[in-house]
Amino acid sequence: MFRKIHSNRDPSVTLFGELRKEFAIYYNKGMEKFQSLLKAYPYHCYVVMLILIPLSCVYVFILTPQPRSAHPPRQTVKTQPVSDSFSGMMRAGSSLARTISLKKEIEAIVAKDSLTAKDGLRLESALAELEQIDQSLKQKP
Image (cartoon, rainbow, N blue to C red; front, top):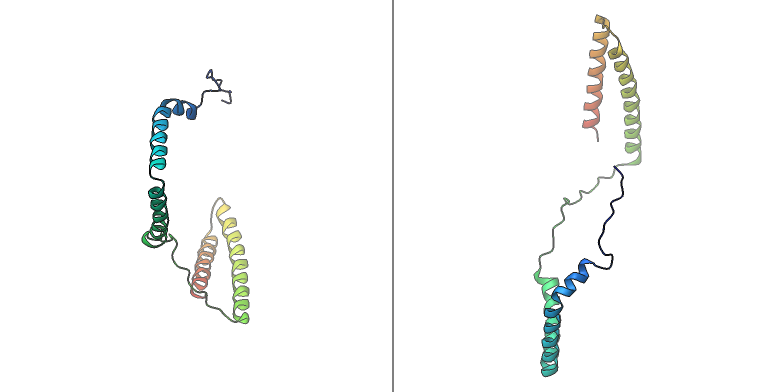
C-alpha cells in the first residue's frame, strides 16, 4: 500500500523545458517583431502606454462591478442592561443543569430491560419537561 513508485524519466526533462523547446521559435519571432516596432515608433508606443495606464485604472476601479459578499449583512445587536443579561445567564445555567439531570434519568430508564408503568410515566414527564425547557429558552432571548 505504501510502496514507493520509481520512475525512469530523465530528471533534467521538465514540462516547462519541453514547452520552451516547442514554442521557442514563435516566441523569438514575436519578440523580434515587437522590438522592431518599438525601434521604429518609440514615441507612439510611449504615448499609447501613457494612455492605457489611466484607462486601465478607470476600468478596474469604476467600470467593473464590485463582487457582492456571499454573507448577509450583519444585524445590529440589541444591548441589554447587565442585570438582564446576568439573570439570563443564570436562567440558562439552571436550565442546562436540569436538562443534564433529565438526560441522565432518561438514559437510566431506557437502559432497563423491561419498563413498568411507573417508568413509562416518569419517562413521559421527563420528556415533557425537556420540551418545556426548550420552549422557554426559545421564547426568551
